[in-house]
Image 1: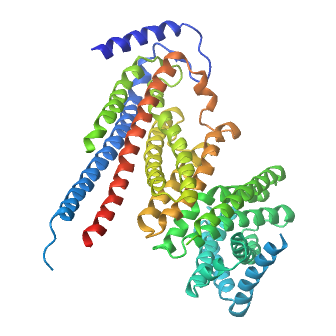
Image 2 (image 1 turned 180 degrees about the horizontal axis):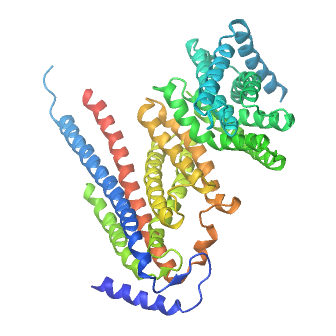
Image 3 (image 1 turned 90 degrees about the vertical axis):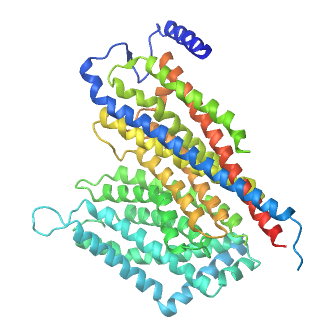
Length: 87
Length: 230
Length: 218
């Protein structure tokens, strides 16, 4: 809840600052003709979905590998601290 | 300083002496380059059905043939060293280690230039390309490009000396790094071969190749020193 | 023990998940409309790919000089993240380009050199995986060449005429665009740090496993 309030306040502030004229390659507008919007949507969604999926895949793989390695360490440490069998 | 160059010359001369006796590398490399050129020329026969090869492809085919045959030559050069275990002996020798690198590099460059002496006229012949109108520019392009390709190749081939899967890893490592050299070489040659030769563009690409050479040789010398410490 | 990573991952994830809010609040771009919103998830990974390549090269140089294993672990992690972020940049880029330029791909300077850089680090990973013993040093040498290419990728749009926007676009962004962009960048950066620490930890634990194996043999 606090995050949302904070973010909204930040956005209001930036909206006020945005009254100045922008420079550079990106020229913003507040409305875009409806005909422009639909064909882009699958592209935008695919782009965001791919980034999400790549992150999740990598993080998940790392998580599993860490678990496996830590398991090996626990097993090996137990083996070492066990009393030695008679030769 | 002269001790360095003397060591370089001894190493290069050793390779040349071995090569002069068997001529194995030069024969196989040249013939492989020839096969490359033929295969690509046949694949890129132009529209129109008169069997004439596409002129625009000439520059690309030339440099691809150089790259492929160069990769094989590099592999074979260091295979020889590994077979006699001579690389370790070379590195143990009291001469400066960079001299070993430069000596091997000189050998590889001379081999590749000898191959190009045969391949370039062949390409000119097959594509009716007027490659020799601006011979000096063309020679500069070929020399700088070959040095750029060979200096990275010699480093990687030496580094991969005893690694597993070294035969396939050499092209995998070498091509991405040397593609800028290839692009500059192809574009420069294409500028020379265009219907109206663009000499200024060719000069720009030649200078770019020279700057690549400076960067790559410096980087390779430093890396060779650090990596070959086994 | 791996639970220790949850706070950092959670923070990074939070920033990442709230970024779309800001992105939606930013105004539409006049000529490209909705598809320009891909920018906020395209520029940060691309920038971080370049920085990660340089970082990997520097750490590899340190490894070649000092030979401490921890530098090798960090370099390996940096190379993996370079490939990951590079893949993100090079999938989101063409998706944007299809609408903005009409083609999926062109062989202009920026795209070609980015692809090359990415391929150098893919070959780094192949070398580490299949090169056998001693490939750490070889890979470190390779990373130096990757590092040398990286600044050229950034400067390529300024030197050559390309379809890709110039580097001067980012410093002159309107405020709402810039805010969303740098917020998203922060999310990507924190995730980079989180993933890198996890990856280095894995290598560290693997080295410990090897050591414990030797001890258990005695």
